[in-house]
Image (cartoon, rainbow, N blue to C red; front, side):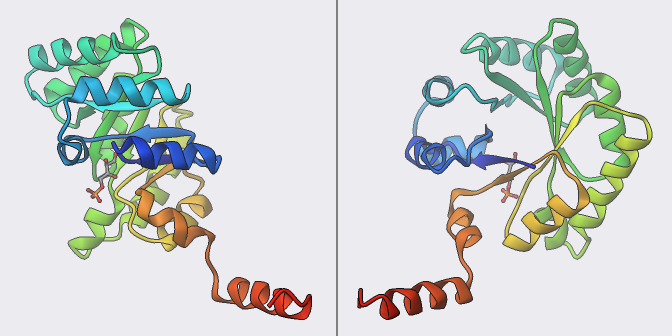
Length: 212
Ligand code: E4P
């Protein structure tokens, strides 16, 4: 399973790359706003850090706006993936970009019907949001299991990038479900390395070896 970083913070992304944990990057308007910088400027800098797919999201929701913004984002670097919110005009734009070999991610996916439409439109990736479903007492991971099954049924090549990830349990369940990738906030990375028995074991080995 690929691990993407869900961040627009260049330092966080650099650290993830150094850890070997950056198969891709996802940004969104909220993450870009936190940087206080311009979208195009941040995306260009992230694209230069590693040759991995970098998701840059369009803001407008009309077909014309999405096409215009998406083309501008795609022109920034070869590894830009244009991230487009799930909506009718958005999926028309996905088809437009697919015809021109520009990769897209359909974001804000919350059920199988939306995922099917995104795949049929030619999306390279979808971003189903598990945490936000859990927040409203629905099971985000049940959705992921369904999406994996449905895409397998029809051999769709669209990759499932599990998004809105909040815990190591999400990471485990995404891998068990066979998702193609998961995009994790940087704050979660440290918790993925940790286990209390690992910490206790290292402590004991250090003590026994006379290092403490
Ligand atoms: C994914 O592409 C989104 O940027 C992100 O995972 C949203 O996560 P949130 O629900 O924690 O904001």
